[in-house]
Length: 114
View 1 (cartoon, rainbow, N blue to C red):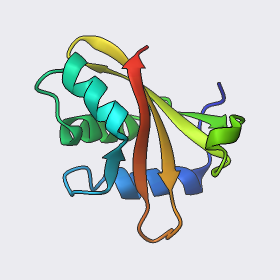
View 2 (view 1 turned 120 degrees about the vertical axis):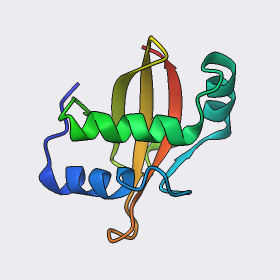
View 3 (view 1 turned 90 degrees about the vertical axis):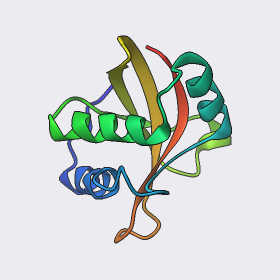
């Protein structure tokens, strides 16, 4: 997968994830919330958002993947994080919602063991 290197997109991620502790800057689908609650007990969305922010701050890899699935192609890309949570390597698929580029947010659409 190609690594995200676009400075403008990285800045949008930084804008959204730097607000990891503020409601609605990182959101998740219900299926993600259910998976997280079952598989990562005690880990809430804000903890995941903070880990994603730390991952970004450390310069760790985020994949930028062209979206080819017809049912999800309302955005040209999705962005993949692979981070360790509770000793487990977790894959987190996100979309960057930048309809208002001055106030972007990150929506987690899938989460599972990597």
